[in-house]
Length: 153
Ligand code: SME
Image 1 (cartoon, rainbow, N blue to C red):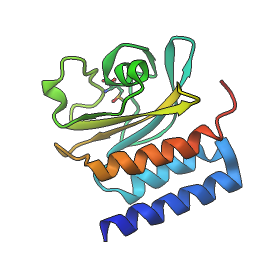
Image 2: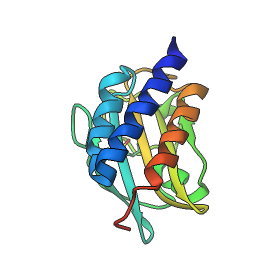
Image 3: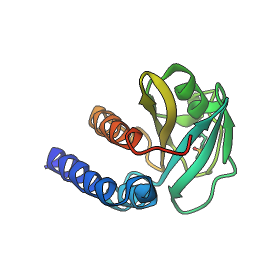
């Protein structure tokens, strides 16, 4: 049941990208937010130079972290290493940059092209330990699809 949901989401997101390309990124963050109840806040950051810049996002509130230096926070760490970060309890990770008082867990998935990090998907959850191996596999596949459509680097 759960895997069917991830597969269906992958197909829907593929369709959005085929129709709209990078213009569809806003639809994609909205799709992820609206279809996965544990995804409380969903954003896409893009890398320019040594900074991450927030692009499309959907969630209850805006974040103050619209730019993040690579190397800082969970987002900056994932951009630096190129590895997905799953944080089960954000309050136990000293790198964590707080955006929302209600956040308990976070996943950051680098968007890579030819081995270079060009952006990332950042998802905050109000539930602790919200992100599983299935979320990681699913979101890494989405990141792979997104990289094909990123033009304005
Ligand atoms: N928590 C992130 C900052 C971005 S907000 O979650 C939207 C971090 O530690 O890098």
